[in-house]
Image (cartoon, rainbow, N blue to C red; front, top):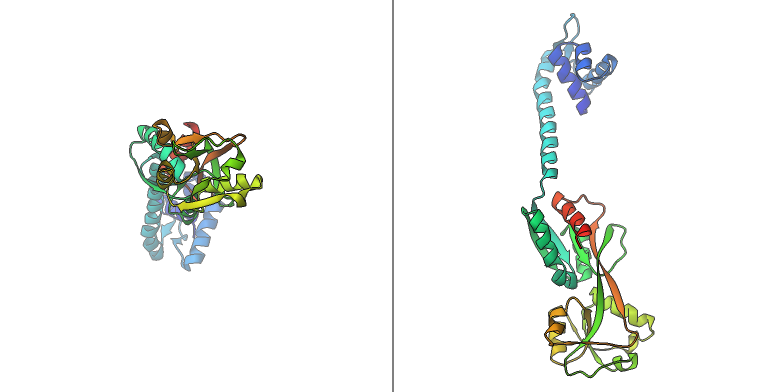
Amino acid sequence: MDFKQIEAFVNVAKYKSFSKAADAIFLSQPTISAHISNLEKELNTVLFDRSSKEVTLTPSGKIFLDYAVNLLNIRNNAVFSISEFEKKITGKLTIASSTTPCRFLVPSLIKKFHENYSSVEFDVKEESTKNVIDYIIKGEAEIGIVGEVLADDRLTYKKIADDNLIIIGSPEVKNITSLEELLKQRFILREKGSATRNIFEKYMDNLGCLEKIKVFAEVSSLEAVLQFVKNGIGISIVSEYACEDYTKTGLVKKIEVDGFKINRDIYLIFHNKRTLSPAARAFYEFSSNNI
């Protein structure tokens, strides 16, 4: 049973004629007849009395007519509701973001978005890149923002910004100009799964000196990294954006190491096998065009 059969049945009942029903819904009379015949076979009953010039409903047909009309009304209401839903940019949008973009990018982006779509509410989750990916895959967030690509066929990545990773130390730390001097320092690093740490370790591995890094402490937040560095416990690698307030106020300083330069991209991601809500789709399009 499909809606074409039901629509044919309702119109034949309405016009009491196969030919008039065919004209009303722009089908041929044989097509209308085939729809009714197939419907009768599926229901195992006769729906119309065809013995006279005017087609009339049988008792079974009268019973089915109410259900048929209701089915068409439910379909039309569903189509209308979905159409209205697609037009409205509203509801709650859950965004999972890794630490750096969550602190320097997401607030300004949401502020701009809210100026255009004031009915959208946000649930922002700050997590490691690995956890952000997990949120997207599990459907616990529609949009993710990360600083590293983790290959997965289920995910679509869209670059939305650039970032630099820099070495920072306390104001008292002497300048470190060479890679050799850098490797003598104690490092404060984010936990494994952090995009910043992953990119830094890949960079050092390409230089052939990953095993020479002295990891003094692993911490689970950017704020902890900055506090450790500010107090002279060690140096670290962080996003230039993420520590901008600290460097401007002199709480930490940027250390220039000859030949040391790490650039990375910031990406917006979503699950490409799921349909985005209107709010998520609007945020994706807005982010792609407003950074």
